[in-house]
Image (cartoon, rainbow, N blue to C red):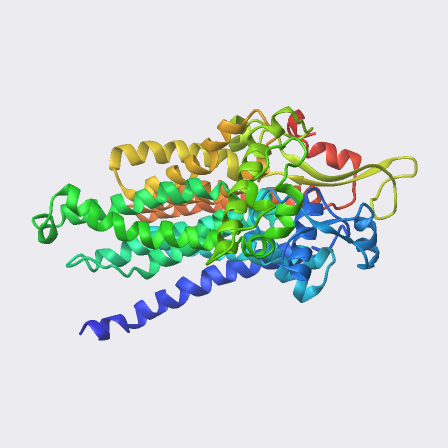
Length: 516
């Protein structure tokens, strides 16, 4: 009887649409992002680091420094003699750069090759988010709504079209949270006993390990949601009459927490360590350049640099010691060396949720008017890539997040806690580093959780309908909101894609003086 029910036409249709709808939205996101992604055919913003690092990983297995003339040669298609013979001081792990390298391997070392991986990962993030929201709300429609909002967000759109690391970080974070939410559903059908093997937790460990292997800020998400998944299960077991009587709070927490730590944290740590394989294999090269003191870092790594360890696993011990010292150098770089640096587009995280100070990744001003620009002779045109979030989504999203906080406190429903915790761990840690140049596009990890909050609000509105008139009114309201977000994305599209537009058209899109 249960088997027959699972194969009923209604349930089968829901399962089909549950995948068809999100995949369709993800394909739309891919088409929008891949169109003309190879333009401009140059290194934009920090692409000059990550695209080249990725190519070095492909060619040598670790990151070498490039010659001073390397950029010009690469853009001309001349890849001869672009490397030095010394390892580079990389300030982020190689996890995200290996994904960039995959695109370069498939399509070549040009602007399309080093950006295509971001396009694919950006579209996949749309798919995973849509499926996550569908699981949280039980509605394919609301899940597709979430995916569509991420599709037309400017920050996520631009970051998907550049060879920077943050889009990969956002993808792995969303994947990790989606796996943990799936694990929450998985275990609730199996509360009769404890399960050491948790496939969704293992996948979450893999995903969050890749997040940390892309940028260290993934550690905050790993820590926060690692605790959350334990709390969810402990509460479920203590509230279940069949299991609450077996063990107390302390023992239940241990029996849930220890396996979860192994499945999530230990797996993530292994993934992170594996991402440093290039360093570990070539540790002697790093020791030769950095191990005796480097620049302001005059402290040697240890006597083993000149007298390598011998015996069983001696080389392995030296490699791990060098990796630790390299991490200390890099941590000091992020927390001390950058404190005196400045950048015209740096911003305080206070304004990120309002998109107070977007980042100009590329700009060409006062270009001569052409027929393509549509201006008269003697006037000027502009090209710009502005990493700017969709104002409709971000500004309403802040309201939705505040509503989610209230709803979480009042209803104590776990769904409201997901976007609140997600935004908190992707945003608040940056206040510890607000004395160094940081940028609003780091908030690309925040926008998926903001959209989850918006989706939960929409789902709550749909749930309140009690008559056809209310159904029509709520549907019309949500429809107008989505239309406004789509139109706003279309309106800002020229300054997200380096399109050539008249100066007056560009100025009209600068809604706030801080956007200039």
